Length: 248
Image 1 (cartoon, helix red, strand yellow):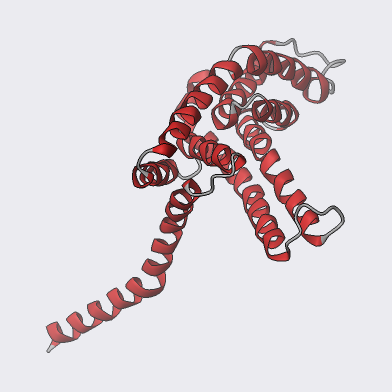
Image 2 (tube, helix red, strand yellow):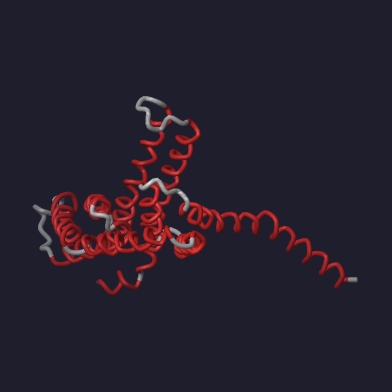
């Protein structure tokens, strides 16, 4: 049972990430539109409405990730506890790793309950709606709040403090490290730690480190676009020329 879960570890992760990406895209677009409109701090303005939507999307992305992973493992009963555990992961600052761990724990707990709980006609309709989600949700809440959450949050804070201390040193090294962390896994735990560091700098009014992060985040899609729109057609033309020469 659990062997299949770990065997398909990557597949379950990618399912959760595929559900999370549209939420991130919505948050990014709403935030960008808000900045274009301006007055993001003035309640009632268009900029304020879009920035609120963007913040809401970014606040929910870990819930979607956790629920997506749990759903991939055990089906619909994993969605509700996954949403709750993912949200709590954000609240305790366990972020990506906390949501990832909770998603797998919830999925495996529900798989275990589906196999071990008695096949009762009276409880058959209650299992997927109440019993599985509630029990797995309670266990996941306790684990993320008291077991996994605090050490993951402490680890993230140590890294943030380390990079905050580098701000008085070489700006090049700091920006280089931010860029490397951003591009290392593009949405994974290292990327999320970089996001936390940049957010901590921004909260202190220091916006420079975001330059390295943003440059690294834009490089892969720009590289893919150049490859698809420019280099690929050129490769086909060169190949055709070579074929013509060979025929002659």
